[in-house]
Every structure is written in structure tokens, then in C-alpha cells.
Length: 256
Image 1 (spheres, rainbow, N blue to C red):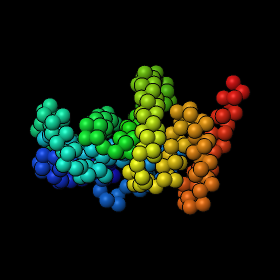
Image 2: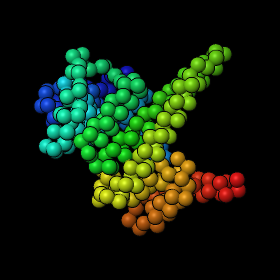
Image 3: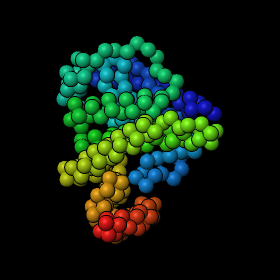
Image 4: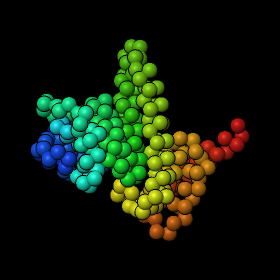
């Protein structure tokens, strides 16, 4: 099966302008999940990145949001979107694409993040959107790296070095944005945070802190997860897996 075979053109109504629109969505039950990354980035066994299809965008007014929060918009938020996004948006007449490239998906999720800021969404929504953007840059990097490795195997010169570095740097920027956002969300909101309970969120924050080099905070957060008697076994096992990495990074930093 090709990537397009796992997708459908879904008919929905925009909650801002009430236009009837089509969006690309995953077919229910068709994507088979596998082990996630350390920071909970989902992966699947179907040969493509399902994260690319995690946001919807209205081609009439420009309203864009994560698919899970697309319909969760209040009247004052609709007013803000109409005043600050729709008023400056040029409607698009073209049909939805058959599939999204990483660049397509990154552009859409960046628009979702901008929309979240405009409508004054919860910090947890903004943090999670930034995290998805980081994951998409990671996916793009992996694709470019695989292409270069294939070229080297054919004794051809790699050509994606500059783009790979851009992916690495931009991913890290958005990981830090996500971490800082979740720190604020933990202080201002009550769980669940975008569907995650407190312990899962603390685990995710520990992983993000480790990835951006904030090892001391990572150690504190992962300690809370491991000692939580109510933590589920999946999260606890992942926490134990990265505990040694965090402590090792702290030792290396102290020795340096």
C-alpha cells in the first residue's frame, strides 16, 4: 500500500467561518503503531510518518489547528481568529493534496501554532503543537539522512548536509519551546494536558529536558515519575530506560 491508501478526504465544517471543507485524515485502524521515541514521538510500521496528518486547515478563512482540538474553539476565540487571521487570509481554491510532504506538514503545523497564539489557547496546546513541529523536523532529517546514506552506498556524494543541520537546529529550538511551554502549563493548568495525565506529562518533560541539555531538571522530573506509585508500567519502564542516560550526562558535564 502507498501512503495515499492510508488517507481519506474527510468532509468537515470549519468552526470559525462555517464553510464545508475537505481535509486529509488517516483512515481509522489502518496505521499500526510501534515503539515511540524517548520523547513519545509516535512511530508506525506502515512506511510513512502519520504525524504529517495531525492538523486541519480551512482553505476559506485560514483557521488551522491540531485535528484533536480543531472543533474546540470558543466564541471569543472565533472572533480573534476572524479579526487577525481571516481578515488577512487569501482563500485557496485548489483541491487538497493526495499526500503531504514534510515541508507541507511543517508549514501547516506552524500555522496551527500561530492560530493557537492568536486565539489565546491553553499553553499546553501551544506546547504540544511546538513539540509536533519538532517531531516533523526530526522526521525530515531522518529522510534526508537516509537519502544521503543511499547516495554514499552508490558511491555518490551526499547533498543534504546543510538541510540536515537546519533540521537538527530547528528541531532543538522547538523542543525547547515545547519544554518551556509545558513548564508554564504545569503551573497554570490542571491535567489532563492534551490528553496526557500528570505523570505522563512529567515523563515527557524529563525527556525534553534531557534532549535540550537541561540535565538537572530532567533528573528531578524522572525521579518523580519513577517514585510515583500510581504510574502505569509503560511510562515507568520508559522512565527507567532514560534514567541512566540522564545521570550519565550529568557525570560527563561535571567531569568536563
